Amino acid sequence: SPATMAPRGGKMGIGRSPAAKARAGLPRANPNDVRVKGFENHAGRMSTLFRPDSAGSDPTRRGSLDLAAGDDDDDESDDDVDPLDRMGNVERARVDDEREIGPAPRYANPASTIHPFPGRVFLEIGCGAGNSAFPLLDLDPHATVFCCDFSPRAVALVERRRRTLPADKRDRIRPFVCDASREQLCGSSDGNRVPPGCVDVCTMVFVLSAIAPERMPDVLRNVSSVMRPGGAGRVLLRDYADGDLSQRRLCDKGDGRKLGDNHYVRGDGTRAFYFEKRFVKDLFADQGMVLEELTVHARAVTNRAAGRRMDRRWIQCSFASASTPATPLPPPPPPPEPEWRRRAREAESARVERAAKVEAERAVREEA
Image (tube, one colour):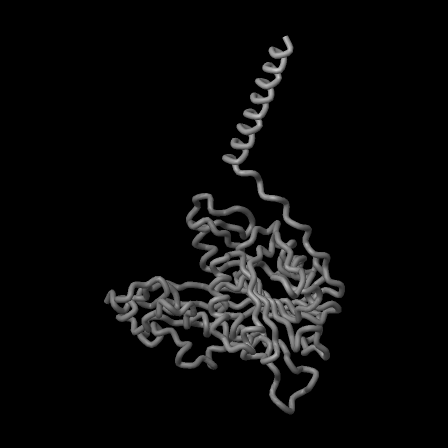
């Protein structure tokens, strides 16, 4: 029946009407809460990427990176289960993942901190509303979290949520507006920037795919300028992989959506890039970052009611920071002058010239 068919809108029913949510048994959204439960669960999984190992384990593996954390279907709690799964309309199956181990050593917590920070320093590029940044404050009680987004509105949401935290947490998260593909991340800790060479872990979750391929090296150079030197830091990437369902849909439209190899533009004007393993490794290697681990995850989601299979693919990887941090990006060029301002400037210049000419003619008449 229509009430039991898998509607559009994602796992937690985002974008569906209140009536459709009620039929599917989904909770009503609180309009005053900027957090969305589905994204909170995802953020919790991302925060487990760097977690201290249990007591009594090998001390050299403390704070080790677990790229598969949160992706095991057997570990899902009842809150993580899609309500449509309970209805029996959706079947999810794990396809063979492609995993590659690189030459970089396994991540370990730094032996020393960097003044003035009491513990590790995290940086999130493209923080949105902060649903991945805030859980890090609980994961590491001494961590300082820098988070940036090119959208002032998104950063304002983070700042509003930051003000509701206790004082000890409020001082450890620092949001700021920045376009990482054009503006410097590196700067003074007193301002809205990150001090050079201090970041232990940088995360980019579905961010790099929204940037033009020719600008991606600038983003990684920008990130490298604030990472710990000597390969002690880690840059984590999670993004779309080549062959994902959304890529095939964009290919099928055939209306000029394709901008280049694995590069497309959506209907709303945003860009989407789908990464191949070789492309990612070369992109980071050009910035001196060595691969630690790379996994291409694949899931097959079958909608039994509609008889449709959806193959989802995403890439998740960890790279060690460069031995020597990159130089910061040069300051961005000034924005082009608006047309209306150019016309106003030219009109004012012409008016001044006419006034000077009239004054010169008047002076000649008086002398005569």
